[in-house]
Picture 1: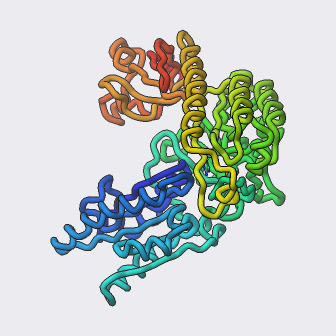
Picture 2: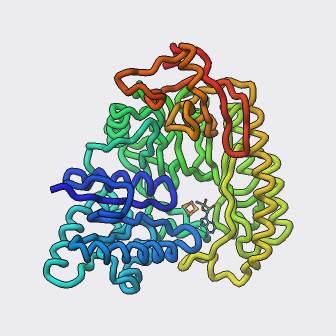
Picture 3: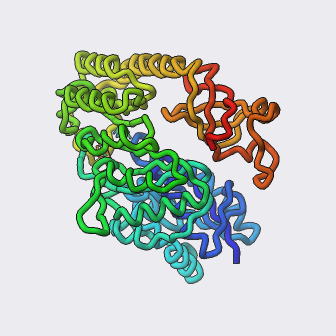
Length: 472
Ligand code: 5AD
Ligand code: SF4
């Protein structure tokens, strides 16, 4: 019997990976994925709890689904609504009370049990009017041991979770509470999954972890590997042309990882290394366990190893107690590092975290004003970084159809989105379409091409492929 599942993903890349794994878990049980909730037997909301309004967003989505579920019921069809992810972990029981239409709640560490949870909900529904199944345990090791080896389609670039959870307890952050304690998957499991991905056409892998550079997974030969060593192992798979990793913590930036950027061609010259603030006083209050100076030392070491490395960060403005001089220190740090891109947020008090009960909350208007100034600076840096690409040739992995006909979208080694005009290159015979893959330009997806950059915008660059068939 074929059943349809629709999975809606919120938040970070790890949720994207988890959603794909949920589909992998359900597939052998007859579930096929559908890209809309209409007509689905099971709808899963894979939620994020990192910043404000997370739960509200889920409630309003559940409200929309309730209307759909009622319509379906009128036509004699049963739709099951499941809430997964970090909001489920943090507020699952409360959600079930507030929204009885939710049939099933499960956390980020229990989705390997999904088929059994769905069966249980169905069984309960058969016996009673409503089903109520809640599973928010933390058996993290069990999850990876029970996920299936068979993977669904991934496209040319894919996420692969290598580490999960966090023991750092930054005072603003919910992650240690929603994802649990730090855990690293064994090297052999990861390499096996990367090989399966390679066989399925993946060329670019992003290794994921809440604290990915704290990775210390077991080796078959005994002992454990660092992230730098893991990257060596994954880079040994021929088809894997590009490796990235996220998210890193400055405290765990060790020499083997910095050396990987120098020694491994597949290790891309791009690093997302959140600093959050440039003020030592605030970094201390955030429990980040490093200073601004230490961050600069790491950046210098990275740039010595790989001079062209592009840098990215996360920033929080308006953390409790942040005054003008703290904020100026953050702007000064940004000036000094010069980022290729970055993410920035107003501080949002998260229930249960130490900073949320601080007396020194910063007024909303001050947060907004600081965020605007910070984003102005970051946008200028990002635009300049993109503009500096004009006239250069960069390798682009083509990942998906572009906005216009004859255009495909890919990424540069520096994570820039690149619009590539393939039409002309194909018309003048520089590139030939692979007939076996279909005769439209999409058949070039998955190829790595040298592209000469001719234009740059704030969020992307664009260019034309150079004739170099040998590059494939
Ligand atoms: N308020 C604002 N931003 C936050 N982040 C995490 N917790 C909070 C919070 N309570 C940001 C941090 C982190 C990113 C994933 O989200 O910058 O690096
Ligand atoms: Fe949250 Fe800090 Fe852990 Fe990152 S390192 S997940 S910000 S507690």
